[in-house]
Amino acid sequence: MPELPEVETTVRGLERVLDGRRIARVEVRRPDIRRPLPEDLGQRLTGARVTGLRRRAKYGLIDTDRGDTLVFHLGMSGRWRVDPSKIEKHDHVVLETDDGRRVALNDPRRFGSVDLVDTGELPDWPAFAALGPEPLDISAKQLRDRLKGRNAPIKGLLLDQSVIAGLGNIYVCEALHRSGIRPTRPGGSISLPRLERLATAIQDVLAEAIAAGGSTLRDFASPDGELGYFSKRFAVYDREGKACDCGGTVWRIVQGGRSTFFCPACQR
Ligand SMILES: [Zn+2]
Image 1 (cartoon, rainbow, N blue to C red):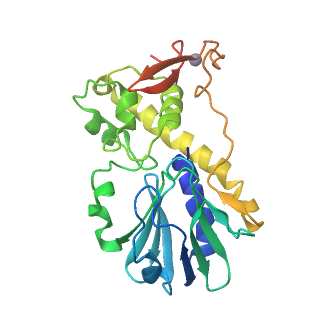
Image 2: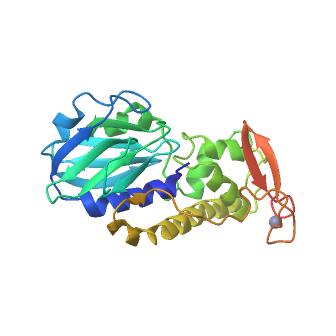
């Protein structure tokens, strides 16, 4: 499943193709992905110039000079293909630029989404209105304010999009491990110095993954270049029973229906 670093890398890859270009042609190849595509998607995008690309939480944003922003979510299996040699069955939306480049949103399982939102109204768009701060910018004090009085385990609170936006299971497990915090600890009981380490760990694990994904960007000039997935190496995630760097053993528990991986020897 694409997490925040994949979305960030996807946005940067699309930026190389789309930023500043006029969208010459839009092909909408089915009426819905997870939910219906905007009926006027082709009409509103065709002829528009792309003025910038951004990410918010796990959404990619493509701004146009018509005051519209295309907002995409990759769901479980979505990816953008750059300059595909041929259009495939699961390419649901295809954009062609005025200089003849093509990008196709491919999503076999169709858990993703595409919306067209008035750029000025984005902060109030329902999916964005309740989002917490961006994990790449969050400070320990912001974390403290949002965790104050919360007795729920820190693991689940970090997955709560209103506490911090766009942080998925993998990076929550990794950041808690790196900051030495046990996932079951009540969120409101963690001291500010430990939250400082947590904020730094969140930023570091994400930045490292983005950098690793960025190294795959050079391949995107080739036909069928696919944006969105890259291999990663984790310290605890999906490593149940394996050795932690501290000499301990990685455990798996289930919290809120999701697997949590942690090391009881170095996470307190
Ligand atoms: Zn350990």
